Image (cartoon, rainbow, N blue to C red; front, side, top):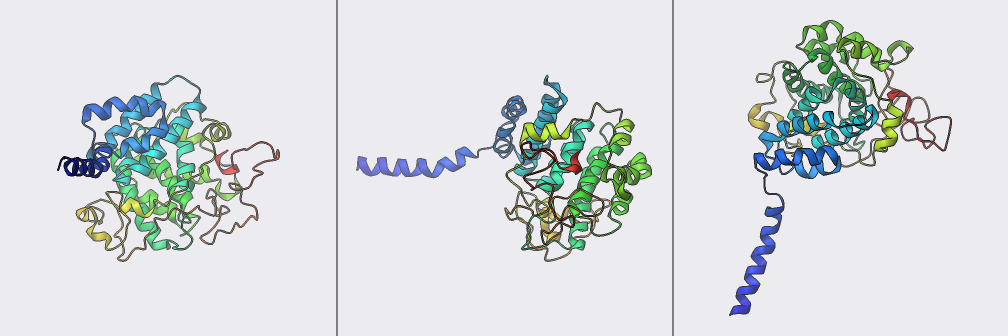
Length: 338
């Protein structure tokens, strides 16, 4: 009888282990872990999964505040901001809310790196070639997410520049289609400065018209710190080995795949009537959340980075090429992040 009781107790303990491992942290506990995640960004994804969904944005803000206070070079901080915030968005329950917190709390100069790498590594519409995202679906998903970002950035310093960086990320992630996407995003911005200058800033940052890509005017408008050397940041953080298809998850709170009727998600929170400036989602949105490596790097005004078939208009893909520059022994950042 005692043996049976012991076996039953062990079975109960084993059943309880998964729940103990994912138990939610109290406010005092997650606040205490912010410093650890700032110093060890690799711990962020596991930690944020234990933070209550309602507190995850506040946790991200706390971690970003801690990173900003760390000593070190501009490039080392850029690598930390990139790694911690990428992990936060990947592990968050409500990705739109956490993404909004990223653009509201990361110092402006570091958004130069984040917008480019998030566009390729997290939100590229080419992430799952087997289930391409149509132009209509991309506009709906991106404008819904930007409505959340724009609202959050309204209360942040340099709101217009921050809103523009978020829009720029989706312009890059689009692969150059549909046409007029920049105008769509600018019309949705709520900050007067962004509405006036956002289009020009995006054109300058993407090197539209064959001009050299530059963030100078955006950073000057925000009186920001020095822009990090992106090639050094890439070397410090390492080229990403994990690419995620999170575009559809921007519409699915609770880290669930965006299948089924979008109008029923989040109690209808993603319908245009409840978020100003958001597009009305279409029914039957395909699930684009598969762990597939995107086949094209997105980062130019003319779509050189690739398309949904994974081809590259310029021949060689600058992001996945082993060359990445004139010296084959040195991994350099692709042209679009320089």
